[in-house]
Every structure is written in C-alpha cells, then in structure tokens.
Length: 352
Ligand SMILES: Cc1cc2nc3c(=O)[nH]c(=O)nc-3n(C[C@H](O)[C@H](O)[C@H](O)COP(=O)(O)O)c2cc1C
Ligand SMILES: CC(C)CC(=O)C(=O)O
Image (tube, helix red, strand yellow):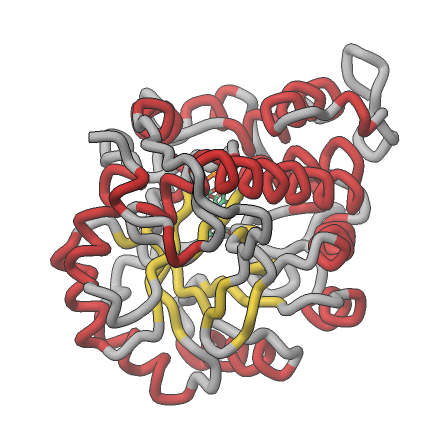
C-alpha cells in the first residue's frame, strides 16, 4: 500500500485517464516507489529520456486541407501479417512488479486492443502461460545469454509458443547507470521470478554481428535488431540479412546523451531506403507522435512506459486503455493532417 492508500492491483476509475500523461500520474499513485522509479527513470542525467519527448514536441506538422479523410485506414502489414494500426507493445521486463497478474494481464489487454505484444526475455510469467491467453500475435524480445545453447533453446521455445518475430536487443551489452533506480534500492522481490532468464542480466559484451548470423541460421521467424541509432549500423543490419530494425535508445535507459530516436529516425530511414521495415520507439505518447514517426520513415512504433503504467493502474483494462487512447489520437491526427492512410504520411507532413 502506498501513501495514497491505493495498492498495486486495485482498480482505478478508468474514466479519469484521458491521455497517457494521466495514466503515468495515476500509476505513480498506485505503484511502490521502487517500481515507479524502475519504470520511469532514465540513465545518467536523463538527457536522452527528456530529449525523446522534447524532440517529438519540437516537430511541427504541416496539414493539408480539403482531402477526403472520411475513410481512415491505419492498417500496416509487417512480415506478412496485417496490423489494424501501427502501434505495438514494446518489450518491458518484470510485469508482476507492476501488477499481480503481470504479463497475463498485458497479453489480455493487448488482445482486447488488437495489438502485437513483444514479450521481454525478462517476463515474470512463462511464455507457455502468456501464449494461452493471447488472442493477438506475440513477438519475443531476446537478450542473448552467455550460454549460447540456452539462448538457442529460448528462441526455439518462443517459436514453439507461436511468437511470430524475434527482436534481438543489441543496445544493452551492459545496462545503463540508473541513479534513481539505485536510490530507490531497486531489487526484484523474492516472489517475482524470471523463468526464462534465471539470474540477473549478465554482461553481453561478447555480442557481435557473428551472433546475429548465428541466430539467423536457426531462427524460423523474422529477426529484428532492437536498439539501432547509427545509420552505419543500419546498413550493416541490412547486409546481415535481418528482416527489420527498431530504432531505439532503450527509452533513454542505457547510454545517456545519445539523440532522441525521432532525431535518429530520418537518417536511418534514408540509409535503409525501404529495403526492410524500420520501427521506432522512445517517447511516443500522443497520436501526433505516431504521425511524426511514420512521416519520418517508421512503419510502426512501439510504446514501453505507458503500457507499464496502464498495467499498474488497472491491469489488462489499463493496457487496453493506453492503446485505445493512442489509436484514437492517431486517427484524429491523421484526419486533421488530411491524410487518410499511412502510405500518405511522408516528409511533406512535417513543417520545414
Ligand atoms: C520498465 C522497462 C523495462 C524494459 N525492459 C526491456 C527489456 O526487457 N528488453 C528490451 O529490449 N527493452 C526493454 N525496455 C525498453 C523498451 O523496450 C523500449 O525500448 C522503451 O521503453 C521505449 O521508450 P518509451 O518507454 O518512452 O515508450 C524496457 C523499458 C522499460 C521502461
Ligand atoms: C532486466 C533489464 C535488463 C530489462 C531492461 O531492459 C530495462 O530495464 O531497461
């Protein structure tokens, strides 16, 4: 129970949650200090964490009027599968820290909102159980373990449970310096286990392009690299044969002072030149943010912290609410921008 007398898992009045910032405020009241700090904080002095938002806010939109937007189409096809709208749940660890139902609630919430849920390697619920309740596609986020045989088994397990894509996180050879997390004495409670990653994340310093080759030699699902910021790495990713990349700075949680993802995105999109899909995450909180990301070259975006906060506020319903708010805002932003489908969102939508 926290200072407001609300405890994690208590239901909150969903009608109070008008936008994603409300969700965070409400979550702060329901979560333990330690859990909130774990989710909300960034690395170092949190420059990148702030820049993710500030850079999105600083971009102005250039609307077109008198176009027919009576039939909005937000569908996008990724790796042969059609999504009704281009917003996915980013992989985040430890959902039982946020809500007693943990990843099961996330999967149910994603299902109700027709969204893809990218399950973290650090799930606190076994994949088998998540797969049982999921009604929408799951993807799997992979942290490559020291033991490559166990890594291979984990990939195969994820595929056996129906995960349709594999996102290999490449920006976390070590985790960032997270001072707020340290100050809040972040430790995982004894009853919160990570069945697919026993023990903490060990350093992944030997992870190289050779491992990406190796992973692709047996992966049966599309492989994406999550955590690309450098256009030269984007080119190497294409050369390595992966199916997609996620432009990400890990939500500002790893290397502080790297640029906002929305700033890196256009350069990476230019380097990739539509050869493979480019996804993006980091600071997406408004429908207009999604419009900006798609206009600057993303095929779809992922949201991390807002989903954790929605989960903390109201379990599955909170997760659904976050996605529905963002989806509705995206539709309104497209209508007001004068663009009826995602294909028509391009650089002309950005005010120069
Ligand atoms: C609480 C939390 C846990 C995370 N855990 C993981 C993880 O296990 N694996 C991973 O690749 N990224 C992880 N991330 C990063 C997210 O996948 C994503 O890149 C980031 O949160 C996007 O930015 P946003 O939170 O501003 O939407 C985590 C982020 C948060 C906030
Ligand atoms: C267990 C952590 C390494 C999960 C993570 O990626 C994060 O907290 O950002």
